[in-house]
Image (cartoon, rainbow over all chains, first blue to last red; front, top):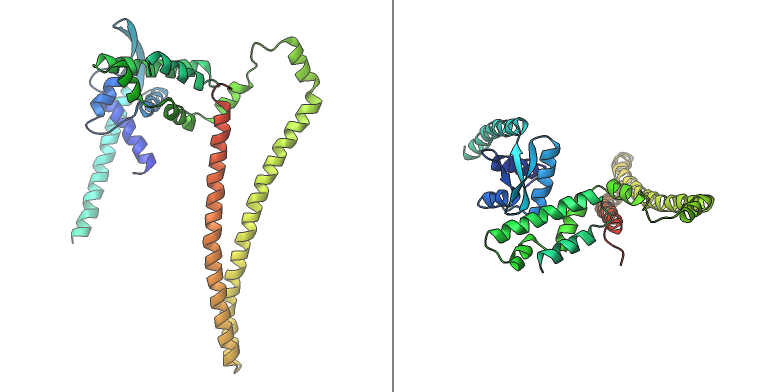
Length: 104
Length: 198
């Protein structure tokens, strides 16, 4: 798959993983596992990128005597997901057009 | 490998990056290992699942900008005494021109490399132009009642065109090689900035 496309996809996937409730690194990877394999290193880069873009915020919460980082989606992050869905509606309709041409 | 050993090695290997960055990354991987263990994995398995320190360092290096590493390296270390600083300043007339010269030499070699490449492409262009020019020449020979000359022109044109195509493929491969080599060299430079000196 095209790298640029994959990068955009992964960003939205991670946002989707924290959309309903705050989550932490290990859980994000676990939640995404049935859909796509994501390495810890890759996730780190994505989280950093999303934080820099103000699409999520980070806070450390104590858990079992240690600190765990929780990621929280911002309104900007939510609008990114909405934007992604709208884009893909469009792409899907183009896809349907392309495959229809093939069948004919 | 225990978590302690893993984080220690990672910290060592990342020396050269800004300390804040190192701590953040180490605590990130450390949290991952803790969460894996909490999920029922043994310490050994949890560390193993994260991947080797090598692969992690490789990944980090591929995305940390070179400028960041250089900036960190350029920061004066605290251990340097007044004598060392004085030496650096007094020695500037000596080492500064040498450093600039060294950079200039590397830069010049690189430019020279690409100049050769451009020259090769010029050869390709010359061959192609030669091939094209044989066509009207063949026409002129034919119209002036010289079929042998015309045939010779067409043949020469075909040979030139063939050579042009062959050379073009070779040139592209070479240019691609140089681009790849440049990438490798940049990666090597990054690598030299990171990690503890043995």
